[in-house]
Image 1 (cartoon, rainbow, N blue to C red):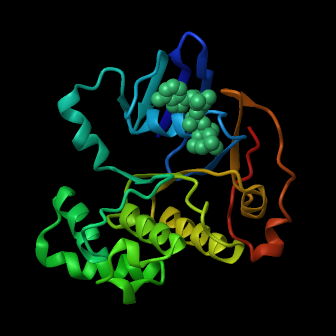
Image 2 (image 1 turned 30 degrees about the horizontal axis):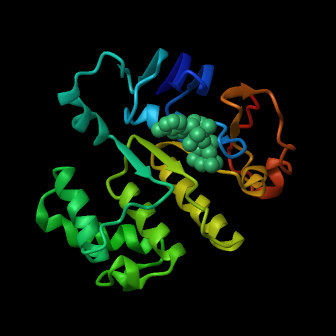
Length: 239
Ligand SMILES: Nc1ncnc2c1ncn2[C@@H]1O[C@H](COP(=O)(O)OP(=O)(O)OP(=O)(O)O)[C@@H](O)[C@H]1O
Ligand SMILES: [Mg+2]
C-alpha cells in the first residue's frame, strides 16, 4: 500500500531530513512513526501525500509511483487519503459543519448526504453537539477532533496523521487511537506519527522509528500480552 524504496530527502546541502529510507506498509496495517523532534516524521508523511518529492528513491502509494505522477493527477490521488495535520488546518470562517461539508464537496459527495455524514463523523469523536460552532470557539483538543472527523469522513483508503494527539490529555489520546482503530477495522490503512511512547506501547502496533532521518532498529518495550487486552487481533512486528 505504501512503499518507500531508498528514499532520501534533502532540503539543502546541509540538511538531509530522510536518509536512504526503505520500508513497506501493507493494506490494512496500522503503523506508528516515531522519533525525536526533527527526525523526519512530518517529511515522511508529506512525501506520501506528494506535498513534496524525494531527492532520491521512489515512493509508491496505492500502486502509484508518485515520482511519475503528473501534477494534474495529484488532486484525484489525494481524494483517497485522509490527512490530520500537526496544525489542524480548519477553516476559521466556516462552522464545523461547513468545514466538513467543504471536504465532502471536494470528495464529490452529493450535498444531500452532507448532514448525515457530518453528523456521524462528529459523533465518532463525540462532537456532534458542536456542528454549528466556529473552530475558534472550540478548545485545542476539540479542534483536533474535528480535524480527525474531517480526515475520516469518507473512509479513506489511507489515513495519515501527524501528531493527532499532540493537544490531548492521555484519556482523550486513547479515545482518538480507538477512533483510528475503528477506521482501521473498516479498512483504512493508517500511518500515525507521534512522540507519545505510552500510546505506542499500549497499542501493540508496528513502529517505524526514525533517528536523524534514518530508520532505526530501536525497540519500544513490547506491550502486554494480547490476550490481556481482550484478544484483539493486532500484529506486532518490530521491524
Ligand atoms: N521545508 C523545509 N526546508 C528546510 N528544512 C526542512 C524543511 N522541512 C523540514 N526541514 C528539516 O528537516 C528535518 C526533519 O523535519 P521534520 O519536520 O520532518 O521533523 P519531525 O520529525 O516531524 O519533527 P517534529 O517532531 O518536531 O514535528 C528537520 O531538521 C527540519 O529542520
Ligand atoms: Mg513533525
